[in-house]
Length: 74
Image (cartoon, rainbow, N blue to C red; front, side):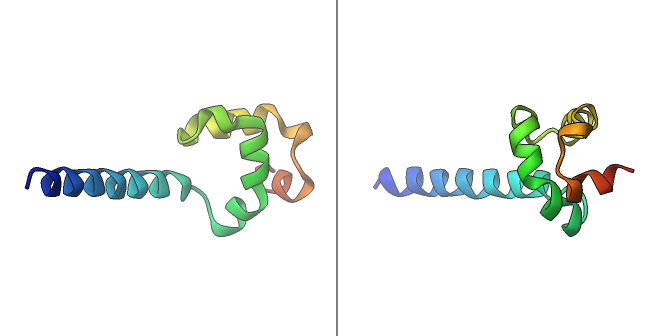
């Protein structure tokens, strides 16, 4: 009987974590996310999910960003 509440607790934790991460990753427009996702992971992955720090990191790495991503920082 004790396993059912533990399983429910685990499911709740997984769902709430997924929602939090999804919300954090949703920063920016669809186009910005599409064009910059790989650059963000490559150059600034250590700062995920902190949007402010990712943005600062991306700006510091401007010359290394892909052309499609770079256009969003002009």
